[in-house]
Image (cartoon, rainbow, N blue to C red; front, top):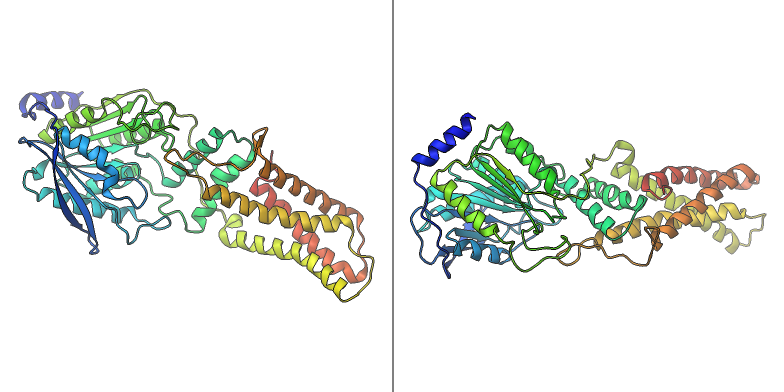
Length: 462
C-alpha cells in the first residue's frame, strides 16, 4: 500500500517524457565496444531521426549463440522508430562457444556497451537501460546489478531457473511434440543432458538467477510470449515476481503477450514463427521505458495468461555411480567384455583349436549386449546433434513411430531384452568346461554391469 501511494505521488510530481511520435527512419552509426579483456566488439548505434529530450536508450543483449548485431536489427529498428535509441553489438568470439561461456563476463560486456552508449551525442546518460533476450535474460539482470547508473531493465523470454533445467524442459517439449512417449523421453531430455553437463559440454548449467532478482531495485519490465516453447513462461514469470517482491522492488511490470513465441514474434502454436513482432509489443516497451527513464515508478503489475504444457523438472548433477568416469569405465568394460568374448572365439578358430564352443545363449549375450551399448550412445548422440533445426527447433526423427517409440529405439530395447534373457539362461544352465570358466565368468560379470546400465539408460524401461 505504501509503495502504491509513493508511486502515485511520484507520477504527480515527476515530469513524464513527451508523447511518443514514431519516426520514419533512424540515424545509424558504427561504433566499437571494448571489453574488459581487450576484445573489440563491432556495434551499431541507432538514434531516432528526430530525437526529443528525455528519450530512453537501451543496450540490446542477444540470446544464446555467437550472434552478430544484425540478428537484432528488426527489434532495433522498431524500437528506434518508436523513439528509443539502441546499441546492438556482436557477441564476443573469445571465451564464448557452444561449450564455453561465462555470464559474469557477458554481463561485463553489456556494461561496457552501456558506457559506450552513454557517451554518444544525443543520448541522455541517465536514461540508459538494458534489454535482454533469452540468454540475455540471465545476463542483463546481472549487468544492471553491477551498473549503478542503469535506468531500467527489459527482459524478453527470460528464464527464472537454471539453464540446464530450462534446456531439459525445452527438449522434453520438443520430443513429446514429435509424438514420442515412454522411456526415450527421459533418456533424451534428461539423462543425455545430464551427461553432456557432466562432460563439461554445457556451460553455466546451474547458474541461479534468483539471488540477482532479489537484489534488483530498478524498474523491471519482463515480457513473455504465451506460445513460448523454449522457456517455461508461467514458471519464469512467477520466479521474476517472487524475486522482485523479495527485493522489495515495487517498480516492475510483467506481461505475457498472447499469440507470441519466445522472441515475441507472432505465432499460432509456438512451432511456427512469424516475421512480425507481436502487436502491442513495441508500443509497450516504448511507453514503459519512456516512463521509467523519466523517473515514473510503476506500481507492481502482472497481466496476461500464460500457457505451459508441463512443469520443469529439476536436473540434478550426476551422482557418483553415474559420473563421467564411471560411465566411461562401464562403457569400456562392456565393449571389452562383449567384444572380447567373440574375439577370443575367433582367435581359437584361427588357431584350429577344437572344443565344445560357447553355448548359443552366451553368444547372444555378447552380440546383443555389444549392439545395445554402442547403439544407445550412437542413437542418443544423433538425437542430440539433430535436436535443433530451423527456427522452431523441431526434432528430426529417423523412421516411423510405433506406440510413441521410434523404430530405432524399439530395436535397441528388443536387443537389450534379448541380451538380458541370454544372460539369465547362460547363468542358470551353462556349465563351462574348466578351460572356459574364466571367459564365461568375465562375460557374466559384464552382463551384470549391462543390466544395471540398461535400467539407468532407459532401455529396459517401458
